[in-house]
Length: 305
Image 1: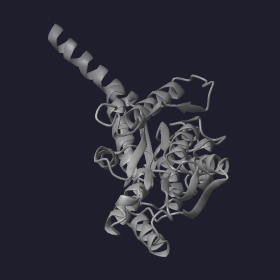
Image 2: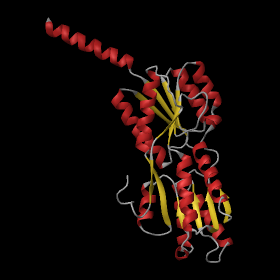
Image 3: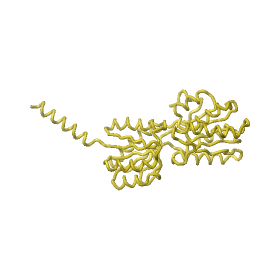
Image 4: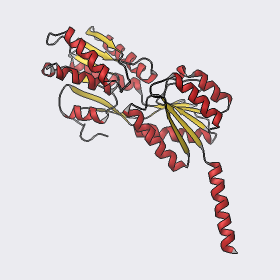
């Protein structure tokens, strides 16, 4: 009899736990990006610890589709939504979530009145650090090529800061400001555009540096420089993210000299913890939560995380 009662109690507790399980949707058009993959995986790991049911939805580069996916999960009655996209481009979806009382948290997204918070790296600091690195390595003079991506707020902000840094050096000229296609993360199109730019500027020293707002364009530029046989000119390349390919390139000691390591796992975990705080009814004091970063160069690439 006692065993039967204990079994029944265990089953009842299990049923209650299942009923109370939080359902969270993560929606992004950028799952092809290594950084996005890393923090989504970290978010899922932390969500498992918290006992949540997580549905990751990738719209494969289709930003407009994020709106309908948000509306879908609102209809399904999720407890919270996490987005990795410019909130200004998905306002209708955010409005639908707000009307349903479902909190939305950004994971390396942007700020918006309809977001409970945005968890990200400090893009202003990362861009300033790499742009100053480039300016110093150029000796404050020469042509620099910039790879930017204004449609995504965290990356757009990096370009704005780099522009401001280079503008403080009267002898630095931004030769071109390129927005590559990002279907594959940005490597292939960046290589093609850099190859064209190298062909248009064939004189050694005509391009002193490449500043990229994330690593994929930096890697594409590196491929173009090496394919053109111009790696001996000392063209300095920097990126942001310090993904595994970038770290290998930096360790090789070639043109790709520096990147900034974002704590992608930290962003994912902190986003999950922020969702947990919101679901618990906590009123957040800050709507932007920054996770620390580290400049990666040849000096620390073997040891820095």
